[in-house]
Structures are given as structure tokens and as C-alpha cells.
Image (cartoon, rainbow, N blue to C red):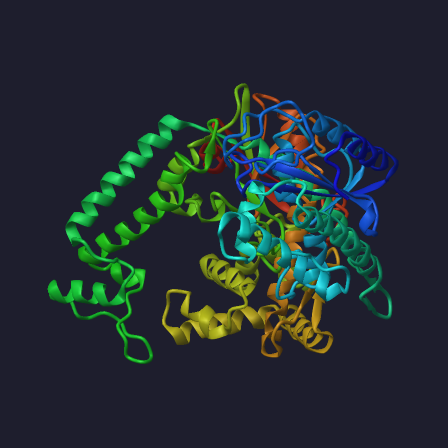
Length: 613
């Protein structure tokens, strides 16, 4: 229902105030919440078409609810003025259960108007992932079709936009929606239809989330526990993204200049060429009289980094590749599109979505991709990169990094004596295996970590840095010393094959995508279990007084607290390692290593100790 007249808009607000649950969708002038703006609000309080209202506020084509303020003429020139009805909308939504499809997107735009989460948040995109992470698409249109509820409308609107602005009548035309009149029949029908579809979709998905998806002899498996964590995490990640992390712009500029100079020097050595092109790299080495490159099984030239590093010519190529990536992916964008008012606002993807994310539930980030940023393994370069990120005034950073979380999950499941005895003695999983089996710790570590990726015995043996046959003997010695692990792998693989899914610590269901991939069962269990632990810890950490969570990368979490506030820091660390308080049934100790400092770099590299429970 169109609500561009005050009496209808007030009726919509009264209905919202009376409702416990409201589906919310905002139409915008683009995808960038920091530079573009909301043009209209969809508020839905029930499953019927008349339960959905569209309140247009900033359509450049007119038809808006009058406000007296100027309507932006461009997608990016909003002056920040808030429509009076938006103040009332924000008040009306306070404390309500809000349902979105792709909540992170809408919430970023709503944040600019002063809105912040105050009640339960539900996201049908996340709900769709939880109920079937193998869906070919998680778009509203696709999921509604699969769940047999009202489908998203669009075709008629695409044609209307095309007729007005001259673009192609397809989904890309939505980039011009802001230019349409807010009272256009197709705009209203499309927008209200999104609200109705989202409401109906949530009604369908929450049934699937609550009912058991598998019943064994002694347990019912459902998605309720993992859904609770995923939905509780939405406002946590929203706050982290909107808060952002402060950037030391002087350090950023200095490091950018240094990397750029090194890039130019290396490029001068090799000349203008595409360092990613095998053909051009091959020609480059021929010109320098080098032809002993390795070959693929089919006989084609291969240039792995390990071989490139054996010559000064190859080392120059490696430097050009790495520095180009550092400049293009991090340093230059961090001075431009990634930075807003001196802060970087990373976008977190808590599950698989239409473009990013993972099927296992592991968190990922973009703008920038923090997981690809240099870290501890890159030594001094990693330190200098992370020193760019600094805490707010009067605060300091602490980083807590779970000690080989996935291996501990594996130990929880298989109950291998070598690991359990080592944990009782306060040893980490690598030292535990080394001491129990008489294997060098570096080999124990390599095998432990390779197992978590699902690597086979030959692959693992080849990574030990010794002749293959010797490596295979070490791998056999490892498995002979952990018979419980071999049995666990066998049982997990068999269950994956027979059921078609495995269930993680919190009941996250991960399905078998291909019949010949059942051997990845242990990897799925540990990856999914890792997601359960990290996300549960982040939700709990958000409730610790005087702590602000800033970033999460793989198994580590970065948070800030007042300088010298050891109580807040210790409370946070205790929360992170206490599996019982996180609601996770876990039978082996969890350990987190931590460090604090005046930058992310200091917190990462200044290892002060570890805490275990």
C-alpha cells in the first residue's frame, strides 16, 4: 500500500507499533551506504498484500511523502537531512523483532539515520542458508520460489525503469530505481511485494529451523541452537562494521610509498610484462638463459613460487606479484574507497550469500579482505601492515587467537589418548603428538594441520620436507599412534555417505554436495565447529562490559578496552575460552594466546601469554 500521504503513513506507523514482528526493507540510491541514501521504506506487519506499506521519502522522480526538505537530485548528494517520518519509523521499530532479507545491507543504510539494533534481528538469507547451504541461489526471488511463497516481483518494474531512463529492462535497471517517482504503481507493487515475500519466507523458514531434521536413538538434531547464535551475531557484526577501525594515515602513507618504490624497482628489473602470464614468464626466463623450470603432468611449463625464489630473476617476479597485490588490494584502496572519516569499515559475511561467504559458516570479510592481509607468518611485513590499525584515543588493543581450534575439535570427537594425555599435561596438540609418538614437533604440526584440510597421506608426506618414502613412514607412524583418529575418520565418512550430511557442535547441518566427497567429513565437522565456537564467542564477547569488538580474522578476535583495564581484558579472555558458558558441549581444553598493544601489529606480535579452560 502506498503511504505518501500523511494519514496513510501514520496508519502504517500505528500498525507497526501494535505489531510484535515487522519485516523491513529499504530502497536505496545504490549499494554504498556511506555515500548513497535511502529513497523509500517498506514496512510489513503480516502475510497479506494489504499488510505491507511503502513510504517513499527521497525518490528523485517525485511522488514522495512531503517533508519540506530538498530531495537529492543525484545518487550521492544527500545532505544528511532526515525526513520527519523516518524519525517516527525508527521510534516505532524500537524493540521489535525485525525481519530482513540480507539484513547487513539494510542496516548499514538505516545506521546513517541514527537507527541501531534494539530487538531481535532475523535474516531470511541466513535462514535460507541454514536450512539448505547448497541452494543454487540465496536471492529473495530464488528462495521464495523454492519455499513456495509469494515470489519477488520485478519484471514489470524493470520495464518501467527502462522506459523512463533508457536502460535495458533487466535486473541491472534497479540501479536507477531512485530516479523513478515514488508513487509509480510498479515501484509500489515491487517494494511492497518484497515485504510480503520476506514475511512469508520467514514464516516458512522458521518452521524448518525449529523442527528436527534428524532423529537418532538418543538425540534430536535441529537448527535452533545454531540459528540463535547466527541471528544474535547480526547486530554484533553490524556494530563492528559501523564502528570501524581507526587508521594511522601517516603509517599507511609511509608503507604505501615504500612498497610502491620496491615495486617500481622490481618492475624495472624485469621490464613491462604480465607476471601472471605463464607464456610471458617463460619468454622472460628464456631471454635470461634459464630453462630448467618444472613442468606439469602434461608437460607444460610451471612456475611455482618455490621455484621462482631460486633465482634473482624469479625473485623479482615474486616481488612484483606480491607488491602489486598489496598495493591494489589493500594500501591504495585503504587510502580511498575503503576509508571513511579516517576509519576502515570492513564488511563481514557471516554465511554464504550471493557473492561472498562460506558454506561451512566460517566468517569472511571484504572491503578489505582481512584474511588475505599480511599477518604473523609474513613477519616484519605483517607487523607493519597491522600497525596501520590503531585503537581509539585512551584505548588499547588485545588480540586473542585460539590455539589450533580445529585440531581441538577433532580431539573432542575422536578422544585420541595421545592428545588427551598431552592436554592434561598442559601441552599444545603438536607437542602432545611429538612427545607421545616420537615424531619431530615440526612434522607433528605439519600433519595435524594438513589433516584439517582433508589432505591425503601422500599429499601430507610431500609437505614434510623429507624424501617421500620417509615422509610416508612418518605419516603411518602418526596414524598408528592415533588409532582413535583413524576410527573417527572412518565413522564420520560413513555417516556423511549414509545420511548425506554431518552435524556440527551446535547442530549446523552441512550437506554432502558430491557423493565422492564423503572423505571431507572431518574437515566439514572441524570447519563448521570452528564457526560455531568463534561466533558463539563473539556474541558473548559483545556482552562483556567495557569491551568493544573490532575485527575477527580466522581464529583470532581483536577487541579494544581502556588502557590498563586488565579486568575488562581478562573478563573478555575468560569469556572466549569458556566453552561451557558459550553453550558448547566440549570435552577438551580450549586455549587462546593473547597480546595487547597500541596497534593491531603490537597486539599480534607481542605475545604475552595464554589462557586455557
